[in-house]
Length: 435
Image (cartoon, rainbow, N blue to C red):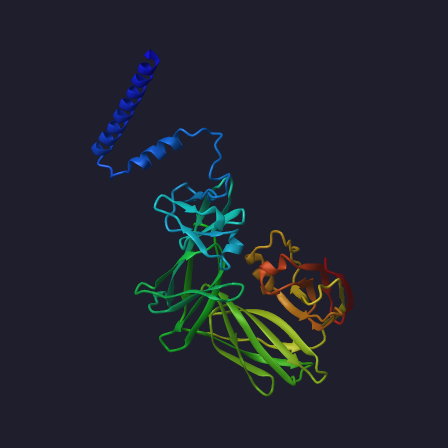
């Protein structure tokens, strides 16, 4: 009987304690102004909180999702970058059409569902920065973006600011247009958010006399750097004229063209040919002109020769080409890449050899300016150059995949070179091997 009383007393105490716990819970919820919660929900949560670690979890039963990937986008100084688009994969892959998985917040952070990422990298893209990627480690990733650069400058005609002159910024490899702009009243212009690399700035407009302006310049943009370009034009142009002959006689056909390296960049020009081998190029941009003559004789062989002449504003200049005598170089190039751009270039002077690993765009174009003859080869690799002016030459054989007139292509190509000193009437055979 005494045992039953004790049991009843214990049960009463337990019930009283439960009532107190429930009262305290409801009092706390009311003080925090929390929404109404069902008693069964509270009890269920209390049971779950007190569950042993050995109890099978939802993850073990396969019902829970994988953990989210959390990351942050910053610049090279550690400052957060907001509004960056996060995509899957390295930059080269993500840039080709990967969908945007997330956009970074004001503090640079973002979250991506892990089941949407199969690669081990994420990339971030922002119009004011260079894209970058970062590895995903333990569902965490940090992506550091470099700042894009800019190209700015001014256009002058006769030392006065030129307004409303059109400028175009294009890719140096495929010539695709990146941006266009015009000069303001002060002649100034600017291209913003330009990614690092090689670009071409083209200028088009008209002089006060109505003569067209057409010039371009290659520009290297470094990361986070502002690159200045100034174009100076003169309304007084130069006149270039002369005559082309083969052994003293007019050729069957010929052409004269060239380009001027001046303060405004590289300006191209061509001449009007006459029936007796004479030519005339009007309104040529003043500066150091590289002139090329191509002439075909009765033997159907095409002669090529380059010459340099300084053209001064408002002056006439005479430059004649005579393909008479000279030296002959012939031979064969071995180990050419099938289907590549294969050729032999002959440059005036003994120039330092090219190093593909360190070849810069400036060095590349400096070499192009010195080319006296060049010929593209078929797969046989045989070549013949006649009527070469006596003097020193650097002969370069090349086998270049892609665009042979781009510095980047030469870094992936094969080539060989040799130094020559040619004399009048000399015939020389060369055997070259590109490697």
